[in-house]
Image (cartoon, rainbow, N blue to C red; front, top):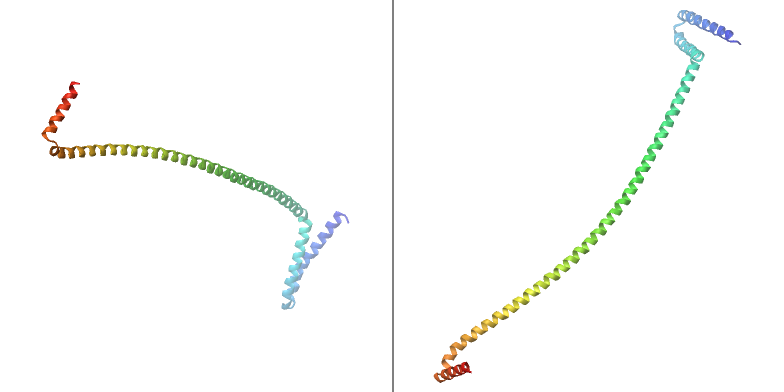
Length: 192
């Protein structure tokens, strides 16, 4: 069949369907009232078939084009989403890598700080030992000075006590003759 014959056949079909729709309600009214629900169902199917025929005839190509366009849009959107997903995954991997590097750097800094702290601790301990040696030596010197001063003070006190004792006992023990003899010895030592 050629295109004009098809179009003619379609027009004839539409014409009969239209006549059928116009004539059938009149016949349906004249008939038994129980026939109305069956008529309504039949008309729904006829309307559905006409709608499908019109859609197939006139809307098939635009619907196909629309669906193809939608398909290409969805494919491009999916590819964009895949690209975005790959980019985000690479960013996540980069962040993980930087996190690992940061943890390694942090551990290195921590180890270095601990080593510096240990070195500083040893220096402080050594300084404290030296200061304690100096303080002990100085304390020892001070103690020796105090001992020497205490000995000198004790000698002086003993000397004072001995002189006091001698002054108390000598006047009773020395006689006038002893005084004369001491005076003569002293005078003789001056002339010689």
